[in-house]
Length: 300
Ligand SMILES: Nc1ncnc2c1ncn2[C@@H]1O[C@H](COP(=O)(O)OP(=O)(O)O)[C@@H](O)[C@H]1O
Ligand SMILES: [Mg+2]
Image 1 (cartoon, rainbow, N blue to C red):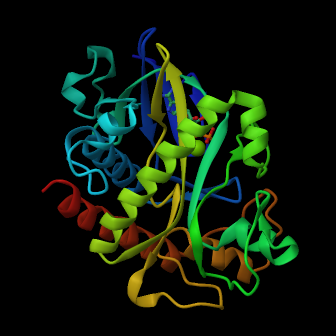
Image 2 (image 1 turned 45 degrees about the vertical axis):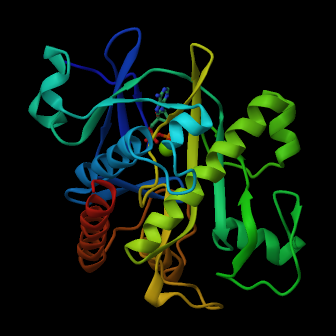
């Protein structure tokens, strides 16, 4: 049967299953600086799909560490788009081998067109902004922070989600003007709470959660956590024992690839350079290591 995705993202393909649901298929593609590389990372799609699924199920079913009497979903009154990643539960025509273990069935929502970025440490574009202005997304920060510094408080730094090109950081006020004060506060609150919860769990398996990105959608007037969550693709994880300030902190996730790209001074425009074999192998190892540890931490 010939199935055509309704959307091909940088890393994932989206199929419309019916009027209510989508199938999100994670590929082995890898992107950095919004450019997709020619090489694939074997097994990456399956690992990322598993990691997101584990988090969705955790928020839904397990008592939260920061609100001990309820699940995060109950406490913060949100839902997740996750329905199942068990391929035998998919409608028949989607039960094809290539979707097995690397896809999930989700509720279709109306996307809120912003990326909800949360930061516990200063890195990436926030570090660049801080160096120049002492601010991040219009939030003034103290003098003297370094690359990798733990932030005085967890920051919510939204950015636009562009159909093409790079996303731009915006102020919280801008978000309020675009989507309304109530919704803006709500998705900020949910994002920060999930970040705190996830930081505790990541620390217990030896990682610092530097920053991450969430997306939300609306369905039946309810807020849904959508897309992928707390994967190495949407987050910066640092190995606790490697944490130090100042120099470019070798990150456990895709930063490895980013650092390589910086080192060859690629101008970040297509065509992408090729990724050396040793980097691909190290990336696979790292994805699988995080998956293994999270499985233990989230399915107790
Ligand atoms: N439940 C959902 N409802 C609607 N859109 C979704 C849902 N979950 C994810 N998406 C969208 O599907 C796409 C996933 O593909 P991705 O490879 O991340 O592409 P992109 O390059 O647009 O980020 C994103 O645009 C994301 O916003
Ligand atoms: Mg995306």
